[in-house]
Length: 625
Image 1 (cartoon, rainbow, N blue to C red):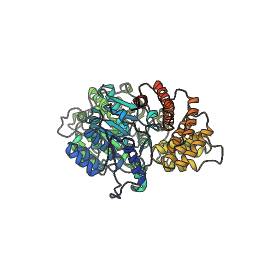
Image 2 (cartoon, one colour; image 1 turned 30 degrees about the vertical axis):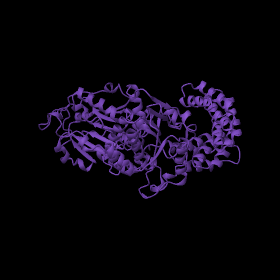
Image 3 (tube, rainbow, N blue to C red; image 1 turned 60 degrees about the vertical axis):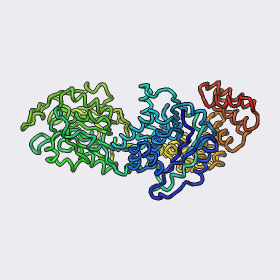
């Protein structure tokens, strides 16, 4: 059972620690209390959270929160600690309840809600804005463990620490292993957003540095106050047994330097991927460390580089500390003892051929799970024996593209002064900042790398802006841009982008609908309602337009207009359970209990597993005392 507690939290901006909540946010908090009279409402702050963590032995969570720069990540971690300790329902400050619905969910052990649909939505993606759980639920314990590990490794993506991305991975893993247990309920996005709760004002975000949303800030600054990922304590040390990875540094003017056959292609790859964390295994003279740093400086893309070298003598001889943020002396196979290690790019340049084949495959299998990409370079038929007592400098294994067949790989080969060279770019299982297509790879092989012409990875917003600029009359593209901006939390920018391109007449219903959503989220209710009416009129066969209009009319008390909008929606989609549920609300508020009961029964017939519909039907059907 989920306790009757509602948790919310406010973290003031660092620039104004004494700031309180604005009236619009306080009103949204009051709505949770008003609609759920049997529930206790708690508005948390950091001092209160610290006390909770002390009492419930959760101080590692609070310590991690203090490392975080962005309040969004702090709140993601805080909700896990609060729900793990006390249980109850968490609601982000921006959420506005549309009705009292929490009692119907209290019988579950864990409740998550799908994220609302946007350009990056996938089925089953949970949001972190609304969570219900009993105290000590295994999902919360696992989420805390994952989050603390990712903070320790300085995961640079806020959503992948304790946000939707991290929760989605964990949810899939626990469902597949049946570790989630019974009592789990996932609210579908179409039965949650706009029905149970909706996005309201987010004025509490104002006042943070530059007034930029955290999703934009994390592109240019670390989400941590102490940005030191991949700490030596989590990396292999010199005390670990060394056996397989030989000294790979090259003595100056003595051993041959690595081939430059793929320098241009490697530069294309690095400029495109813009990895935030790079692990160079067997760095040699530091070639890739220098290349990554130079490109990072010129492209303005922050990166943290770690070199893993087995021979401490090579560290000093080639001054590796000058070219890497961190240098770890240890055996590459020691990585297998650090399962929480993560990186965007692992590099093995002229390295695998020095290892036993079985050990090399073990290392690759380990890295596949923990890297977004792996860049491997190796020679063919290059005979090399020991050198100056370094037996491990010898080449002892052969490699071919067939060895990488189990994975998604792009391969290139060429001839250099030292013979045939190979490059393989392997796609790992970690999220990638930018995908690499076969067409990209082919073009890079044919085009010498020039920084000014380098393919720059663009965000979805960048690409949408370009498309909108190229097709100024395409309302569908403009609507898509608006929704993308809203998903990034930039509601005012979304409203401005769409409103400035409105024509005196002839606007599409889709554009008007998107603009109505943006206006509504900014609190411009009358404007949103007018746009919703225009959208339904412009697109009379758009179910979503009629549903959106109906919800806004319900909120404004225009019951008869709302009934007509819902009737229009049902004429287009007779099996729309949400429309019947909303119609039941209209009839109930209008004093028509029999029609209200008939409508909710119709909704329940279409969605028999919906506990909220069933609870409402039972309440209406119960004899009045």
